[in-house]
Length: 129
Image 1 (cartoon, one colour):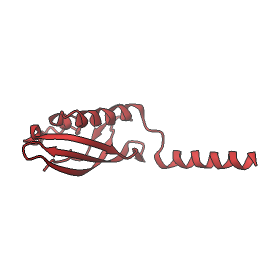
Image 2 (spheres, helix red, strand yellow):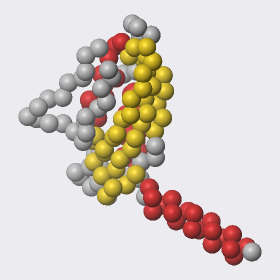
Image 3 (tube, helix red, strand yellow):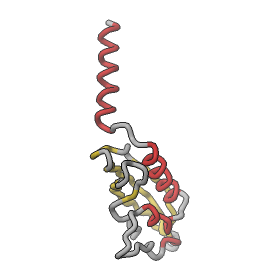
Image 4 (cartoon, helix red, strand yellow):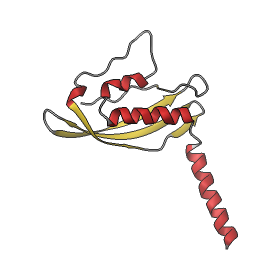
């Protein structure tokens, strides 16, 4: 019986490792910092997490001072490749001037071009409409 239980536990642990992989420490810090930025309402700073583009500077959406985030729920990071991970976050917020509650789904793509030392979002930050 003990052998069966041990085998089942190893199988479950192995499945979780295969599904999500061991996330890089620097990526975990970057994703956590992005989440904190959104949760604490510094929405204009979200663009700092997007991969820089010299040809087309990235600017923050106007009107973000009218947004108050009320909830940020994210799925676990999922490994696509060693240098590409994805995550989905559901963000609930209020338009403070009209007291309207809204929700958006943020599909995040995180990539590294230097073997995991620096991570950036390679897709646009969410728009709060």
